[in-house]
Amino acid sequence: MNFQKLEKLIFYTFIFSIPFQTRVVLRAWGVGFNEWNAAFLYGTDLLILAILGFWALRFVFGKARFNFSNYDWFLIGFITIFAISIQNASNQTLGFYQLLKLAEFSLLYFYVKSNLSAVFNMMTSFFVFFASGFFQAVLAILQYLRQADLGLRFLGETVLNPDLFNVAVFLVNGEKIMRPYGTTPHPNILALFLFISVFIYYFFYIKGDKFSHSKSGLLIYSVLLFSLFLTFSRVVIFVWMIGVGLRRLIFNRKFSRIAEGLSLKKITVATLTAIIIFSILFWPHILTRIKISSQEEAVSLRNYYNKVSLYDKLFFGVGSGNFVNWFREINPGLASNLYQPVHNIYLLISSEAGILGLTAFLLFLIFLAKNYFKIKFEQPFYYSLFIIFLSLLFFGLFDHFLFTIQQGRIVFWLVLGLIASIINVPIAQPDRARPSGGRNSRSSRDRDAL
Image (cartoon, rainbow, N blue to C red; front, side, top):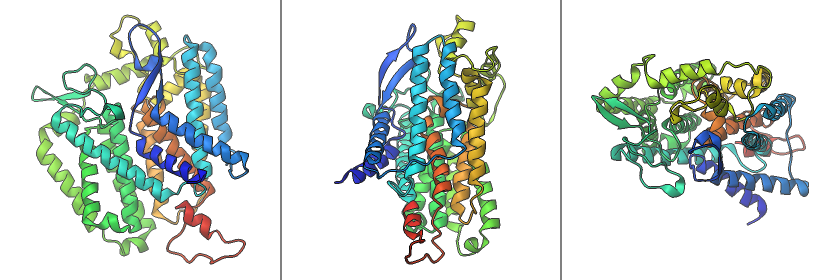
């Protein structure tokens, strides 16, 4: 096996392993263990380092490329401001660790951006992600039925029981109901992974993939959708409903010729069947979760964190990775589980890296999206991926995991990398004739890209 094949294998293994939280604690600070005051080495970190190492090796032999765009200067600026903010941190060692994590995922972004078609292709990556999503969906169903974990410690599965402290539960007729985790650290992160897997299936279906139209493919889709509902993640399920409606509206308007030749009957029946069965089985649970009160802990805590995130270190913040330390200093004596990052990545970035850091981060996202829209959207795929991108930005308004938790960070920077890679390597147009050869032919490159 040559090095490039090994690199490709490691990359696809990494994609499948995203939900696994196998890790070791490198160091923990403070009295007692707090997730946000600790440094970890994840199995996925080793896989990222491996693919970055192969990429560096290819540079040595002149067989690698590094795609850098003008809007990437805002990312460099964000990293620089994040580094400067460490001077304000009460725990500067933790600040340097979080800076290293940001650098790691920024390099992952550049790797994905630079190596579409050179190492990996989009279709295989999506299929591996989809397969991993189905694996997580099965685990989620089994966890829910057991109302306990499955003992998969080697994959990093959390010890789960409805009566354990800090396990996500809700009450139905006075009974604690545990939400499933898969091998992720929280049901909301599992929901994100399943959400993306479902939209990958939609892409396969619209593309006319035979498996996605088969009974087996539709069954797997139904399991994925059922498991997404089973997470009871209100924001993610709400965005799924909006995303499905938006995707279908755009598809019918922009791609009417494709729509005319594509039957949506099978997928519509599968979707409605999953919704109906879930509603019949879990109607009391649904009624409990759709009732949102300002007194509910998940809502009141978010409001509280949002308020305390307003601080006096306006320009460079309280230091990278140091929001929880700062929060503990100004609010001592709270219960240990209340010391968490603010549940909004934009407020969190503003708190830790100041208004300058938030501005650089937002400008990076804005110009990345602007360049993406310069592409002539001739395939439904472009819109499907952009809906996922917008969904992640929306999720960031209600939770911090895209910026603080390994699995969320990986998904976020992977999607950004894919968006940027497509700007540089347009997706192939399968319904058009490609040039058969010649110096200016892009056929092989386009084919590899998809």
